[in-house]
Amino acid sequence: VGTQGGMSSFSLAVPLAVASTRACAVRQSRASKQTRRAVSARAGFPNRPVDVSLWESETDVAQWESVKTLVTGLGMDETSADKCMTRAFGWGGQTYWRESKVEEVPLFEDVETRIDFLLEIGVPEDKLVELLGKVPEVLGVPIELLKENVKYVEKNYFMKRSTRNFANYLLRTPQALGNNVDCAGTCVGECNRCWVR
Image (cartoon, rainbow, N blue to C red; front, side):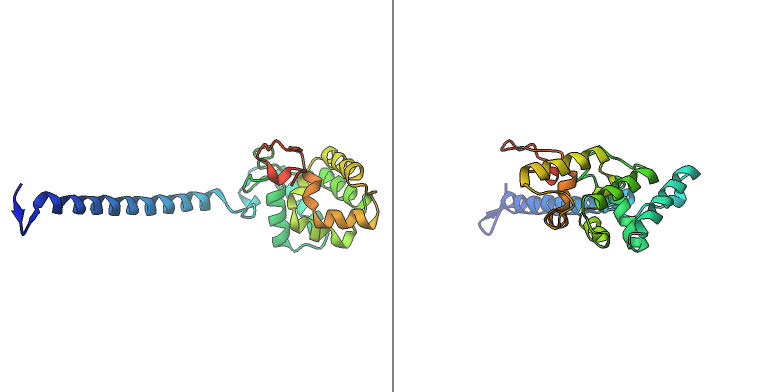
């Protein structure tokens, strides 16, 4: 190994090789991020409204549109209704549903039953849009779980349904309607649907 001015050619080559490797890693990282962004965009994230014009089943399209009419009838504009339904029926990200509801086509009768139940337990009709704006997934929660969670609130928080306090609680914490986990100190990692939080 020859030396030039007190430095070997090896000592010059090593930093250049390291710099070249780092530059290559940065380029690969950027390319990887761009690929992930492109895949996410194709996958419809985050919660892009569902394009029913691409569906083959006329029955599914009719069902989706009838539920959308029901939701807009509550006072939501079409864009908000689309976003609400996208999240409520598992057409976007799965942070809430965790693959338990994936691209469901809702039935008008089921959604109408859930809305009627919310009104029955004391949520004012003019506040339904506010509640669904906070947690749209409530529209997709099975009626059995909604009823179970109302009983849980009544028993554990000493509130009666159809009272102002009960309605105010649901408007503050609408996620309680979809809770399905009670860790009670042993976390299972599903905090968005847990009573403990």
